[in-house]
Image (cartoon, rainbow, N blue to C red; front, side, top):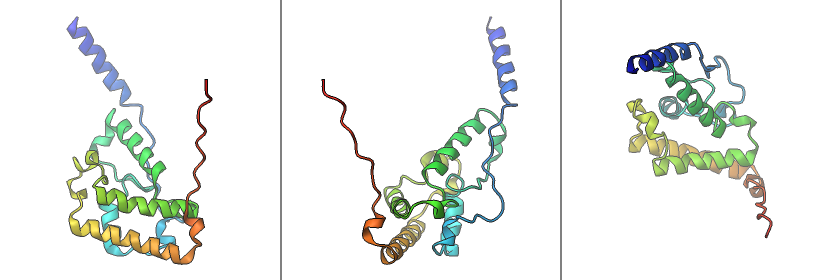
Length: 170
């Protein structure tokens, strides 16, 4: 009985190898990249490449284990969530208030140590940011926010939230 279960599991494992998720690789120029609006110095870009862009851009560098299921499904979902939340290559398409909010979020996430995710740094040890790298990213994000504050009216930088409707009484 155990042998039959193992054979079925092996067959399932082999079959799922043929069901591959779409990869997040868009080579070439990214016309809506953050760098089209704000300077991204080389030191900042090198940190972003190592610690951020695999999940927050349109060009993920996939590890060897992405060739096997279910790891590829997990990574595809992780990248999809990351790019949906914040995409450095789509930044220029965001409304100004969302841009401002996302730049502030970079600072907060780095300050709290929430980014890069521990599930990412577990495998990608080089993505663990030291204090100097954290300060570089934080300073860069603060400079962008200051530039936005000088360029746009204050009320345009505030993200309009949909009002929360309380549930009907009764």
